[in-house]
Image (tube, rainbow, N blue to C red; front, side, top):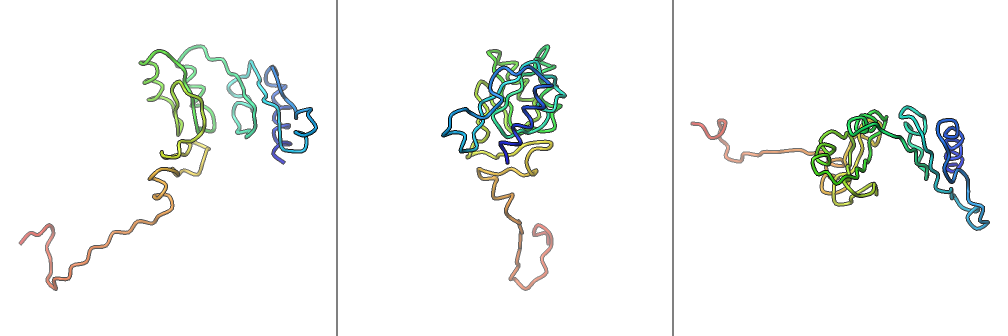
Length: 164
């Protein structure tokens, strides 16, 4: 079912950008038996295109050209989803500015978007995820109801902070 969903998005993408490669299931008979789809790249995609705004969950990349740094941040933050973003730069000041301005759950600087760091909180912003951060130590917060209890066994009425 997911391969058919990816095929649907590729057909939409053909009207929203220039198909550079992929766009179909592999021709190899062994791979046709599984849920495989060729890596697909579209160029000249507008920021508001369907293939730029929706989570396809397949090997489909939409290249969106930004005029400058600020427009790239604006394009990133204007999507409906905010799971992971990657920024490649040699300019450390721009890297820190990107870290501050990018509105996604995980930001990589000069590294690919592998999607998760198991030792750190993981989850997206806006329409991605369920609003919680899973993985790392904080995963316990998502699945735990915290309760604090204080019991005084002295048998006397205690005043706040031990005030007499």
